[in-house]
Image 1 (cartoon, rainbow, N blue to C red):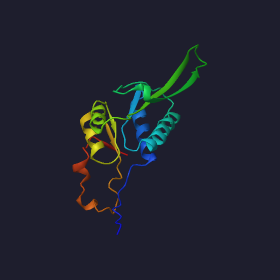
Image 2 (image 1 turned 135 degrees about the horizontal axis):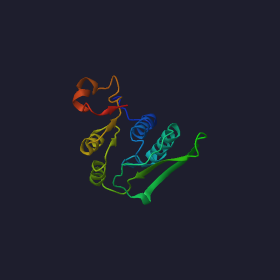
Image 3 (image 1 turned 90 degrees about the vertical axis):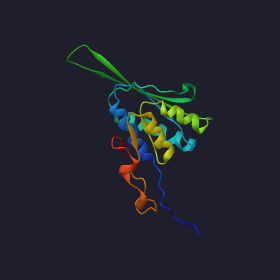
Image 4 (image 1 turned 30 degrees about the horizontal axis):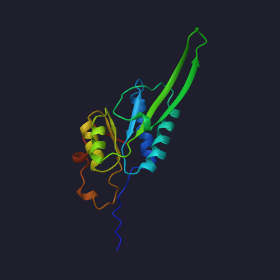
Length: 170
């Protein structure tokens, strides 16, 4: 007999909102997103799309917080917007740039060490991501729809005990 535990996972829309939140709040910084996952193919497709979508929504420049990562394995996403002001002779060019690095071929403890060295975190569900966000300090964005309403875990789950008050639920 198969039991539906109503387990939920973060969807692509959550990652799009979380990336947009980070880009909006760190608009004066170059952002390096380091993705550690056991769902590499899904993440490569959806997380890269989330970064591209967030950059399309923003009209301000992005450059900034660095973190440990191998840029040889990264997808660099770069768009440029040029604005000319007619009241002066100044032309300003704004470059929106974010680097996405996918951790591949590393053990879980190596990925956790990398994530704990980051300035801020976007986590999905589960304790691995929770510990990465906790150890990194900084801003942690978490998936607020966990656990799903009606899940067996729900009566045992206290959101206030699980998510520190300074974390941001999206």
